[in-house]
Image 1 (cartoon, helix red, strand yellow):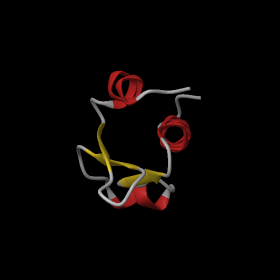
Image 2 (cartoon, helix red, strand yellow; image 1 turned 180 degrees about the vertical axis):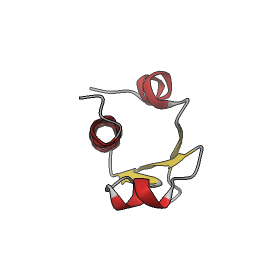
Image 3 (cartoon, one colour; image 1 turned 90 degrees about the vertical axis):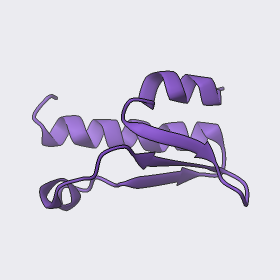
Length: 72
């Protein structure tokens, strides 16, 4: 089980992570994305009903970004 603190430690430099007012969680990139990043499937906002779901989405963003930048 992932905690909000776990998310902040792992992704907090790249994402602002917060509980949503209507329930669930969201993350917003601290820096905007280029048009090229968007074309490669990266997102500026990710959401999840639970912290665990948001963690999975952020891990996917991390994977996509590394793939785009040729790090994998």
